[in-house]
Amino acid sequence: MINQPIRLVSSNPTLGCTPITCKDCGVYQLCLPMGLNQSDTSLLDSIVKRKQVYKRGEVLYRVGQPFEYIYAVRSGSVKTYIFTDDGRVQITGFHIAGELIGLNDIDSRVYSCEARALETTSVCEVSIDRFQELVEKSPSIQYQMLKIMSGEIRHNQELMLLLGKKSAEERVATYLLSLSRRFERRNYSPAQFNLSMSRSDIGNYLGLAEETVCRVLARFQDEGLITSQRRQINLVDMDRLKNIARG
Amino acid sequence: MINQPIRLVSSNPTLGCTPITCKDCGVYQLCLPMGLNQSDTSLLDSIVKRKQVYKRGEVLYRVGQPFEYIYAVRSGSVKTYIFTDDGRVQITGFHIAGELIGLNDIDSRVYSCEARALETTSVCEVSIDRFQELVEKSPSIQYQMLKIMSGEIRHNQELMLLLGKKSAEERVATYLLSLSRRFERRNYSPAQFNLSMSRSDIGNYLGLAEETVCRVLARFQDEGLITSQRRQINLVDMDRLKNIARG
DNA sequence: CGGACAGTTGAATGAATTCAACAATCGTGG
DNA sequence: CCACGATTGTTGAATTCATTCAACTGTCCG
Image (cartoon, rainbow over the protein chains, first blue to last red):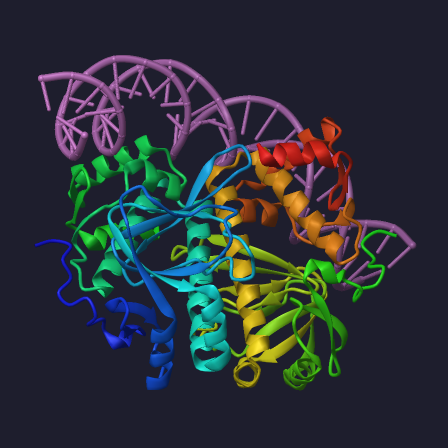
């Protein structure tokens, strides 16, 4: 059975993630790096509210709306994207279970991007006001937040490298491997998975035309690197894929 | 007199920056958003150490070096950049007076990018250990840090939009206007300034060839949008420039 | 079943790159 | 202070990788 977690909360501690249990939402993984004590996690419990489910295509928030919640994805997936003034769109991230959304905008009163569910998606909405109270009570949680955001900055920088310097093949290979790693961390299969996003979304994210993504995937398939049936992806030769991703 | 600040520390409070005086380094602007009280700023003084000067081309830190300091630029400018495995480079940021360097990597033990002075540059090196102690004492400072990093994520996302979706002309126009805004905040002239980075650096940052940057600047000059003499830039028609940047 | 959407493939086009040659400027050492 | 080599910037011509346009197929879901 593909894309089914073995145990969603069994994330390997050496990866720097600790599972957090939330009374209101049931068990989920907030993916805060290690370093929280018992009282910290109870504090977290106290502010993590409003479990919510969004269906495919539904919007979590729009640009300019008052910034109210940080979102922790429990299951499913979400895309976030920003706009140019003339309406072009750039997808800035795909977010799967265990990831946080809304970290940009903490210094702002409004959301700077739009978030939309790619499939049926369950999230916990964390009130920013209560979150702010929390971090003032618990410096260690706040320091964990600094770390998470620091990691997000690094992730974005790698994306800048991809967008600025990589060829179409390198981009697609990098993308597949990045997804693979994230699934692996969550105990999904790193070699076989379903894409929840369209070719068009992938292309948008990678700075490519949708047709280019198709062609590259077709080439990868011809060369025996992957098999793909629409959104079902199978990474056959990860090593060669890694070589391509590296350039 | 171009590129001379009227008063370096007179930054308009409405911009969300408060000038911070550091006993060890003299007066400089750390550009922490408003919200610190007197005891916070004394705390900051106590950890901001090691005023340091780097000459053009000198390296502040390299990839893989132990992460020891966050840097606050006092004067001059610094570029930060990352590498692909095969040695390609992507410049991820140019940093001028009042800006912080090293915020990515807080969750890491090593620097993930390299930083190099573009000209004679004075910085304050802030020990990460002492910084961590500080933020545990002062939640308000830490929350300011969250805000700064949140802003950095947003800035990087705009760069992703630029790299993924904008034409060469839009990129260069956006770049010039971004520099202009940053100079303006620091009471430098927003219309006339010197670039401390080469065409090659600009192109690298914007995902363009150096020659393309030249050609676009030449076109802008032909069309009366700017005048440029090598690194001396004069924005003549900001409104049209803004229109181009928007697409 | 049918209409809409998503994905694929081919051919023509184009924006930016690469290659190349040259010009202007910088800076270092005599 | 000047000269000269190195660096940086500029411009033209050829090339290329990805895009755009177009036609078509497969799949999903009401």
